[in-house]
Image (cartoon, rainbow, N blue to C red):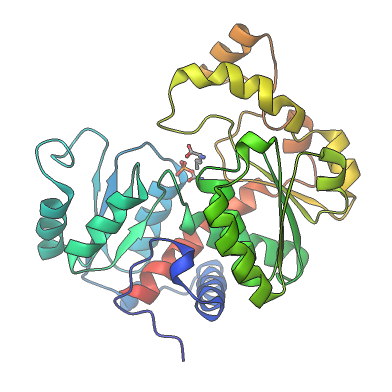
Amino acid sequence: NVDLKGRNFLKLLDFTQEEILYLIDLAADLKKKKKDGVLTQDMHRGKNVALIFEKTSTRTRCSFEVAAHDLGMGTTYLDPSGSQIGKKESIADTARVLGRMYDGIEYRGYGQDIVEELAKYAGVPVWNGLTNEFHPTQMLADVLTICEKLGRIKGVKLTYMGDARYNMGNSLMVVCAKLGMHFTACTTKKYFPDAELVKTCEALAKESSGSITLTEDVEAGTKGADVIYTDVWVSMGEPDAVWTERIRELTPYQVNKGVMENAGSQAIFMHCLPAFHDLKTKIGKEMGEKFGITEMEVTDEVFESGQSVVFDEAENRMHTIKAVMAATL
Ligand code: CP
Ligand code: NVA
């Protein structure tokens, strides 16, 4: 009895527990179909979607493109520099133009207010592919992965380490609160999530029998956790100047062997990716040389260990994004 046709997908706060679980079930079903070679092109054949990216992406963009094609749809990718959006043309005008041509619009960019504005004027479903505040499609992939790996969602203890004030920390706190999971932000006070959002999530967690904990104590915060989750210490769009303080302040919250051992052998390691697990990428090398470090938010040892499920998580981006489009169109 869940019907999401015509709905936007902007943040999980807008969805009930039942609706979120419906999307997870649908994604699992679409994943099975894909693995079994069952084609799903008839679901939305002949439709078209626009994919706006004001920030770069590998997983989200590829997931939307592959999922759209699997559902029989055409795609247009608008890259960070290749359109008039936000420069020569307002979000409201862009929404009204694209809404005349496309059946749905994905948006990745800066403020949540931008994707909300786009949705207000588009007249077709708008999907949030990441804003500074929220990353809701990532949450569906993460919950599907947790479900596959641990066989349950309710009661799962998830500890997030690092900058918990940004899109990943916020979104994980919301999804845990909605689904009856136990969320812990384990970081310095400065990086605790916004107090207002914490309040909202505490009320949701009360209803779902979940919980919200904020702690600076690594040992207490990670003990017995089922999921240890982290993200980059500096997010897209943040100024380079913050690297120095982030490395200094968040190094105590690095996910390493000690953290995983403290959590226990049942624990899985998750990361939305991209990750600085070794510093062999261009930016990684620069930072490594500048700060005299070889690893950042997660050690290579944990990232490459049997407890790490990061590539299953990445694959699930595609199946869950497919579910969002399949359900809302
Ligand atoms: N996790 C994630 O959103 O990855 P991309 O930035 O590559 O899309
Ligand atoms: N917090 C990261 C997530 C990337 C998927 C960022 O916003 O850059």
